[in-house]
Length: 231
Image (tube, rainbow, N blue to C red; front, side, top):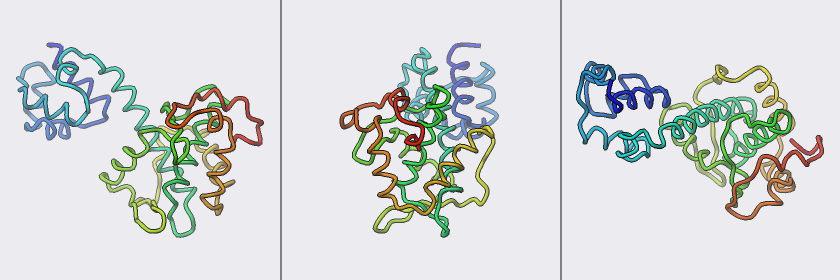
């Protein structure tokens, strides 16, 4: 099997796509795509360009496998984060099933940094940044867009953007019982609280206070907090 065919197969697996989905991206039939993965079919430059546009990788990266491992790791973390987001939405939303976009981001931040506080590892594996909206990973907005496109959440505008789930039952596969328990505990503490309350709380934590605007936030900063001030 040539390197490009192995790359296509590995990338599909990393992205969590089916052969049919990958075939659609490349602009070929599923049987044709299956032959490509086996190394028996040819892949055109135009198909590679379509794949590069979808994944954000360059054509040269696809050919040489440069950045493929990094992309796979990023996609794995994003997929985990989306599961966390849907779970948090199910237990953290108000009685009307809605939650503000900002409050949801804060709940996810607390889950990741509290998990690091106890395990020296984040729950999602994403990197957070200090911006005007608070500690948030760059992929938060991508996660929301993809979940909207997949008809799993709805975002409505108003005085604040509100997010609601379209599915009654959140996905739990890929989330350990301990992870679910922690997220439920965080939701329970902040249930019914205003967005401004959780914003003030997270802005009073060291990860926010010790970093500059737009700077990446080291997880290690949360370890210096007292237990009662982690979430």
